[in-house]
Image (tube, rainbow, N blue to C red; front, side):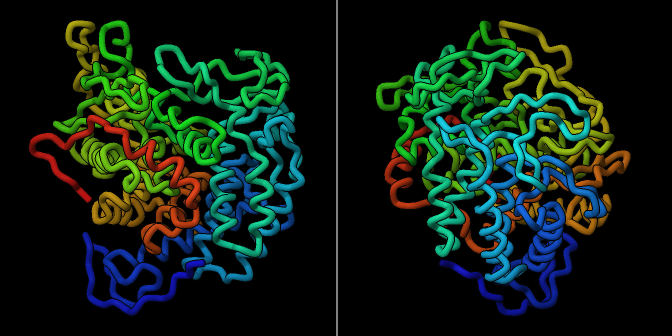
Length: 517
């Protein structure tokens, strides 16, 4: 398969204050190449520090000094580590032999992890040092009710597809794991309320949890009982679409599942709780009528995510060629999403920086960040520490209570800026350069997880998920989307691409705006 060779040296290149003189490695010597390679090398250091040498399982997080990894992991963490290992190899950070050894260790451990037999799916929390399924939280001792997550299993399965192509010597092991995972177990053919096609549940428990659940025969026809989440993944612009793509590619769920999620909630005052009243039109795909609604921001129209965060919109795009396969949907929506985030951070809120996504809270714990007005959730993810909630008029329905707020201590999350690289490389590099050198939110493992720009408060730790998104984004930028090449095969393209190609979002730049990439 592909290996990326060192590029010729470059000299005298400057982008927004970045000195780019000197030799470049992967990336062909474009402006910013040297910085991207350095950031990837440091980011890999954090992932290495999180990973147990014996099991090959990464912890969920590690302290900013890289000394103390967390004591739990998830399928997403493991999947992100696998594709990060492939990326580190392709960028020349580690050798082929080291990459193969690391991947082999992780696959061996995965083969021995306890799973749900009826679906082949992995539980959501394991010990990274022993591989045991967690039934109590290590820090608090609170009970864990073992859960099978749709989206988390999606990211692990996606990584297995990458490993089998990127490292042919391990294809048999990767395929055995991948082929045993049945995404039909998550797919509710009856769908969610108000939607015309089936869609995925958030996941299930194999024993009744104390909280809300729906007891039902497992959707894959295994005959086993599952206790499904009361909610569905019913939003189109969501990281959860990775599981939908995989289910379609595997022939485990129908392609009409792409019509089983909301672009926006429907129009009208019955749905006036959502952040904006959408506009749009109904379109029919394979006999299924879909409301193709959009929100507006500064003249631009776009399909929003639930919370208005970057990773909901762009994480699947790291692996799936969405802009190529969705020329009238994702190709329009992704760059507009980036422009909305950028304009919010620089112009509307005046933070001087941008990129908002769930991440570590600089003031302790974890928090969900986003551009509130650009998400469907009415009390949605906010962009500052004060959780400033924007509430605009919904003409004919409600009057906004806070249409033009003053924003406070904005919290930017570097991984969100990295996700923007394909759509605004120059702007993302300028932004990241400032976060590193002006906000000083950089440590031995690369960019710290988040920083509050006004107070300068830094979340000085690293999260496996966020670091693996950074590795994938840099790897794609420097190797011309090698991860997507590994991920896609002919069968996936034949089943998934036609369904994506027919989608038509109502996204548009509007007057006075243009492509910012």
